[in-house]
Each structure stands twice: as structure tokens, then as C-alpha cells.
Image 1 (spheres, one colour):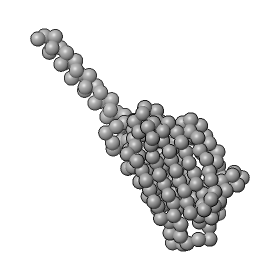
Image 2 (image 1 turned 30 degrees about the horizontal axis):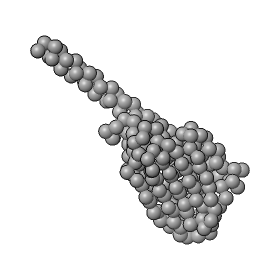
Image 3 (image 1 turned 120 degrees about the vertical axis):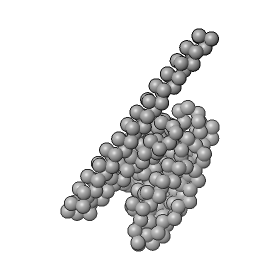
Image 4 (image 1 turned 60 degrees about the horizontal axis):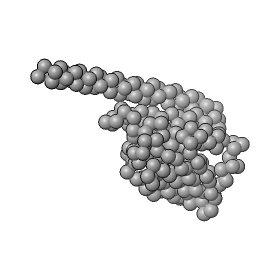
Length: 221
């Protein structure tokens, strides 16, 4: 009986310690999100003070990347898990945020999304989100030039532990390799893909199609 009481007391103590650590981690994510919000505001102010559209757009693109990272910390802070993010909930929000950020009165872009019931760990979701942000940004900037309407197909699906991100537009078929001289997009995507041991490819046919394949760390897809 004494051993049982001691065991229950120890279990209660360990449970309380775990709760405190989870609260601390949530607070860290919350503070990181708030700090990134300050960085985003500073970039916005700097963009407003830029003397030409080129530099203003650079600051705006940096601000969107910061917002993408901030949103992940916010999702983890508000979720039950401190290490994983629901794909559907997060990427629905990301797509909506990018659409609002880059849409104009002169261009109407419709999205068709297919998001599987996938949960990604933090080490995977951040690079994938930044890659998706880069691809979608270039879709808005280059795919629909001279057009008033366009469509983007966005899917993130799984087959066992293998995850596939696919983004395709029905635009003019811009060549990503031609963007190297004017954008860091390819370098950013390559660096992030290497970080998660992913393979990616571009195809230009009836628009531009981007595919990213990687393996989930813990087999929770």
C-alpha cells in the first residue's frame, strides 16, 4: 500500500512537471510569434519608406516569409501538440494569407486545393511552408502576366511516409530557371529542399507545375 501511494505521488509529480514544461514551450512559441510580428511591422514600415517599387516589393516579400514562419508558431501555440501541425488547417490559412497579400483588382486567382489528413512534424512543416510560399509568390508574380484571371491547383498528399507537394498554375508557362538572375527563389527552394532531403522538379506545359517529394520523419502521415 505504501509503495502504491509513493508510486501515485511520483506519477502526479511527473505529470505536473510535464504540464509546466508544456506551458513553458507554448509560451516560447507565443513569444517567438510576437517577436516575428514586430519584425513584420518593421519590414512593412521600411517598405512604405522605399523610394521605388523594386525595393518596396523586396521588403514585402521578406515580410510575407516572416508571416509564414510566425503563423506556424501561432498554430503550435494554439494546438494540443507542441511539435506537429495539421496540414489542412495550416495550409488553408497559408493559401488564404498569400492570396490576400498578392491579389489585386486587376487579377482574379482561384484556388483548387486537395489537402490530405496529414500531420507534419515541426522540422518538416516549416521548410515545406516556406517552399510553398516561394512557389505561390512566383505564380502571382509571373504566371498570369497580361491576364485578368488564373487558377492554381495546390495539393499535399501522402502515401505511407512519402509526402508529395504539388502546385500547378494554368498561366503562361514561365521558366523557373530564367528567374535565377532576378530572384533568390530557386536558391531558397534548393536550400530548404536539401534541409529535409527532398526532391523537387518543375515542368512547363499548359502552365507551370512544381512537385516536391519528401519522407515524413516519424511515419505519422
